Each structure stands twice: as structure tokens, then as C-alpha cells.
Image (cartoon, rainbow, N blue to C red; front, side, top):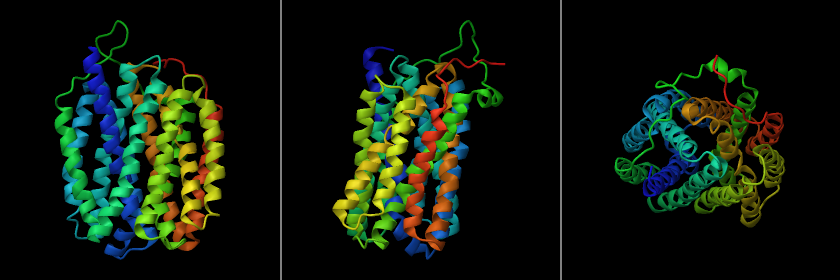
Length: 391
């Protein structure tokens, strides 16, 4: 690739990450309005979030396989195209049952975008993949920061959650048109082979570093998505914050993640991913629990920003270390890790809903902190990266 083509591809990847952050954070700001619109309980809301996570769990393995065989370009284009259709359709959903399956399909499409933007850095940067991955994920944080604030403004202006989805479809369609004009790198192949062998699932399961990385991502995404989807409801119901103040709290969380990912792009050049993930887990545990002591917007915003800083580097550091070992098979490894990550959201979202309904919202909000502490322990024993041995 020429320097100009490389820059355009990196720009597209960053823009896609921004859009991806917006799509994945859409439900958190509108969750109280969706609960009211469909007259459902917290447990039913947790079921819908779990269905979305199920779609995000099913998508990556298919997307990873396609990425290795046909290239990241095709999974990015198909994911964006499906999102345009489903974002538009979601605003017309007349019943909660249809909302469940539409949200599952939307998350399935989002998994294709997620896989593409995690594969591309490994294809274009081998030596500093961790640094580039953190920079790319910085743009996810930008989208996630923008989303709650804009969603809050739309909710305040219209009193309806549906325009939030309709308006998100417009920039997604623009991004799809731009992606059609960008050159992608040729498919990498194994040495001396015209056809790339498929990485058997059994091979991935025998690799301790990948298993521990998958477990850490399972716990991390359960914590990140758990905090993102339930914090607005917590701030509104428990602390009595107004709608815009509560949705802005979610933006503060993602400002912390955004700043933290920039810092991690620098720290990754000097420190191993295991060190960074260890300290992130310890800090995440402490700050999530400290949030429960907040009673004012200033205190809540302070702790939410700190939580974001602690959460920021976990996903990109683990993903860059493990899928950058062999770009020819980055799709399979990325798919496997993304499935594990999405499974964490799928399992813990309904759990948080049940805990919120039958115990309390503060108890549910404490769970992400516990998961952050557990992921540090899980990833502590990961081996240094080494080439996959196909057998």
C-alpha cells in the first residue's frame, strides 16, 4: 500500500470505530425511555440487552472466517449496510418482542464492524500494533462519549427515543459510501502457501495466552457494557438526576476511556499488556465501588471519569497482543476473542437486570467493579505471545 492509501485506511478505520462506539452505546441513554415505552421491568430490559449481546456473540466467528478468506473490506461493508437498514427499522418497532429480535440482528451486524476494525491494525502495523490499536480504540471512545450527550439532547427535545436510532442511520450510510472508495491491503498468506490454512478451534483452545485473554475480555466487556447500559438508570433513579445530567454522566465515563486510550497508546510502547491490564483491573475495582458513595453530580462525574481511565486500555491491549501474532490468521483469533468478549455482555446484562430488580440498583452497579478485579487475576498468568502452531 502507498502512504496515501495507508492513511486513508487508518482514517476509515478510526471513523468506523467512532460510528461503532455510537451504535453500541445507543441503548444505555434511552434505556429508561424504552422501559417506559414498552412497560417492561428491569429484568425484561436486561433480557433485551442480553439478546443484543447474543447477536454480538454469534457475529464475530462468521466475520472472522470471512475476514481471513475474503478480506476485512467485505465484513466492514456488509456490517455497515445491515446497520443502516436495522437502525432505521428499529424506530418503527411496535412491540417489545420484535424489539428483542431486531436488537439481536443489529448487534450481529455491529459484530462485523467490530471484527473488521480490530483486524485492520494487525494487517497494516506489526511492530507497534498495540499502540495503533489503542489509537483506533480511542475513536470508539469518542463515539461512545458523543452518543449519550446527543441522545440526551434528542430525548429532551423530542421526548421520544425512536429518533435517536433514525438519526444514527444517516452517518452510518455516509460511512458506508466512503468505505466503498478506500483501498484495503491484499490478503496476507502463510509462508510458501497460496492458500491459508484455517486455524482449528482446538488449536486456539490449546493456547493458554488466548484462553486467558478470552476470559479477561469476557469479564471486561461484561463490566464495560454493564456500566454503560445501567449507569443512566442508576443516576436517574438512585440519585435523582435529571435526564440530561444522567446521560452526561455516561459521556463522562467515555471521556475517561477516551483520554485513557490515548495514554495507553503511549504506555504500550514501554510496558507489556499484562502490566497495563493488571493495574487497570485493580483501579477499576476500586473506582467502581467508590462511585457508590457519590451523591452529587460533581462526585459522580469524578468517579465515572476515573472508572473510564481504568477501563480504557484493557480491550485494545489484549486484542493487539493476541491477534497481532500472525496477521494471516488475525481474523480467526479476533473472532474467537470477540465471541468471548460478547459472551460476557450476553451473560452479565441479564444478571445486572435481575440484581437491579430483586436486590437494588447499587448492587447491580457494583458488579462491573468486581469483574474488573477478576479480569486482572485472569490475565496475570498469560504467556508472552508466540506463533500459533497448526496441527
